[in-house]
Length: 502
Ligand code: SF4
Image 1 (cartoon, rainbow, N blue to C red):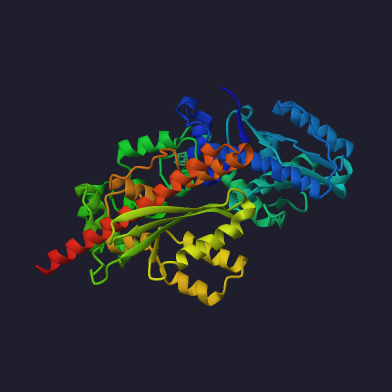
Image 2 (image 1 turned 180 degrees about the vertical axis):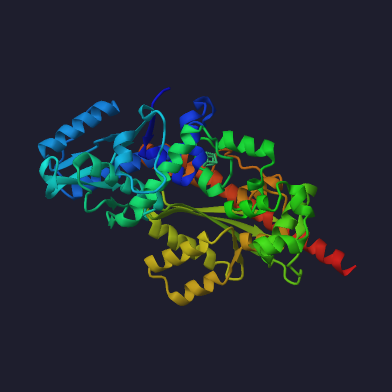
């Protein structure tokens, strides 16, 4: 049998999705999606972030140059033995025997053939500090440099994994393991907590891999959207009519549903309300039952808990607003507005575009002047992001608080309206999913918020205007999608109101 190498990356993926780790080891690579441009961009930025962290901390380092992991590990060990102050890009390696010897959790890994497993870690940096180790009067602690803003649990897990490996290699547990995050902020891992947790997760992960146990598919928009196995998993979920494709079914609720023997749309739609409420609470039980009925009948429904007394506002002039932003650079590079004149029956798109991030202030001013021309017009948008951005820009560019408050009072969040009033036969309540259901299609078929960020980056580096055109077209279509959705919602609620009266 080929040796199983438990890398830190496999472990990190395991924390996010067990199935992903399984597929990375046993899946057919031909079934993977091509790497997304946005992911490549993140990888590049991560490298730049590491380089700038090394530079800003004036770190003088030595780097093992072997690409092969075993050679790289041998070079790293030699550098540690020599007492090099800072080692960048090194590797740590343990056999199963070594790992088992240091484990304190009760259920240790127990396999008949220990030659089958080895452990590999790649901390960004190893830093020398005074102390006693098998090397002499020094020892090392690991630092991982990550692009994330927060110290995510999976980062902490890996930081503990590296600390544990170092403990075996140098004969003493490092006193610390650090993360350096996006803003160059340093975060200390609570090793006493994370070491034990990490050991249990390693045991679980190795057992799953050795038993070749394929975890069930579970589609979660947030977790799966950037995963290279998405198409593969989605097709399986679709063919199984998996419950994770029903909006509102979280992993925890899924367990409850399966525990109740509810494993299909039909069974959820038919189960007694009281029975469902007992397990998952009233609000979600009402929603899930109706959502299942809507999907089965492929029919839009008014929510059971909505009494049709209010409808979204309609006025002669309406504005539909959507933003393209690069949160990492903290720049909102396009404020797109679709002006809808319901009297003249015209629509005109107005893009306020920062061709350079330094133009954001000008864009904000132009946008402000434009929306001030239509003080009576409601501003429709989809999601909270637009409101948050207006607040951010108003604070940044010293817009008077009262004016900002007045402007925000004109904002109408259509996502809020949709989710509070109707149940639709869709897999998600994202703008794309809802507008697609209405038959609306984006001209940029590959467009998405992430892709727009990549286009903007490509524009900045190449000055090729086709990238700007793609962003403008995508943003304009977002505004039109919001407009069509609003028209449909008002009409549907109006009709439902009439049917209720007669
Ligand atoms: S697509 Fe989702 S379920 Fe499939 S491996 Fe990736 S994260 Fe896991």
